[in-house]
Image 1 (cartoon, helix red, strand yellow):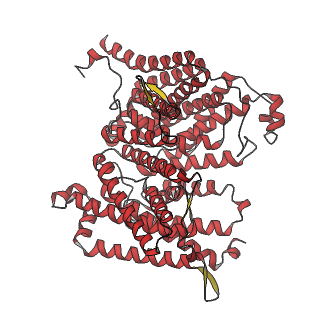
Image 2 (cartoon, rainbow over the protein chains, first blue to last red; image 1 turned 90 degrees about the vertical axis):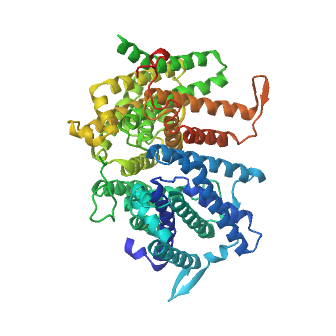
Image 3 (cartoon, chains in turn red, brown; image 1 turned 180 degrees about the vertical axis):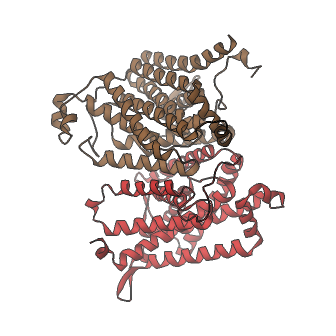
Length: 302
Length: 338
């Protein structure tokens, strides 16, 4: 029954969601790589981008998107300067809880801005035409699905080239591997971190643009749930390597897409439990990550 | 003699603080009493979390699951029989046809919280770092999902109401004191010291014979029992509760309280809980307008959360080790020979 319901449309939607989650996973994983900091406030960058799109709905689409990118990257850099930098080298719980507080703060500010017109939620409708379907080989696929897949593939390819072929990419990879040694060998910490933070901001903005197509109503908790799901996916995939983290993000997006498309809603009441039980099982069997082949769990170093 | 005095001060200071809050609660108007009760229940929950997270250094997002289990167990079992038969008709007969007293319900909450934590901890305590964080978060999700859907053990997605509101200033204060006392006894015990040693250096602790998994499991179980107990206090304070009230927001807020106070000390847990809930109460008063030092302070409505989050973030950025620096309370003249 389940396989019969798995049509082409569901599959393509699931891949589209997986592509968006993969981009979020890269944004989170890149910053984790250089700072060892799990940025819980990443979803609020996307939320801020979505609000910018909503408030600039009347503008030409290109200008609206450009403003979104500019604002999100600026916010991302501000976060680095004001929050991440003073916390460098602190214990993981302190860094994580601080990003909770920042996430709360941005949400509370968004709520006030949003409620100026006394209704909750703003509409970002400039790109909704992209959610219309096109027919490919007899099957209907929404345009945004194709756009997400193309954008995600392009962005990942570009990033892979940046990391592999440029000096700053080399420095970033070195820093992610061993920050202290990399610094001793002349890698500039602030430049590498700024690079990671800017790229992660660009990705957040891209995600904001694509998410508002399917969810045009922007509220303060926009992308919050998605961020939590992606964080789970990133850790399950393996947060120590960028590509395992990305694959983890894609997998969890793809799986949620398939499940939501296939199961009727009255059958899914205990579905979250089943999914999270699976998450626990994977973590117990492969604590370093599902895709972290050949590497042992990162034991506490002496 | 000196050592005993220091230990006495470490326990007496948080306890006195809690007693002071409890005494204040009896002097204010009933509409303001709720702020003090929130603070006392927060102390119980945050200290319960501290017993595991603070002593082991392993981050857990799952402790609110045990608060939730305790709250719903204590709540469901104390709704008066006559109303229960009308409202909670879908329950298992055993739960539907029986009602227990207030104190017994708190003990039941503690027992269930401890049992649940032990069962969960048995496999999960092998994990550390982010994997532990995500796995315990998964426990929270599962608990929330089951409590919300399974109407044979509780009200499901609807509100559980008509719970006797027995957590007044007396029960709130006593409850918080019990949790603090147990947490203190644990951290000074052989077991607690072994776990704290493993927090500082897991490899070295294992090298001198500390069984890290086992020690983490004890702390997790004790923390679960205390969290269940705190959940019982919570439901008897509120009188009605939904699954959303013991879920993500409470998890983040209580963890923030712990880190703001200072992750690694009991004193930090108590100070953090009282400071953050005190600040929250003050800000919600300020939204309605209050007089501070002769000045009228009137915050625009809706800004409470902005200020609360901003101040918490500021404390963490300026003092990452928390308000207490993660140290226990020390008498002023004892500071010299640390």
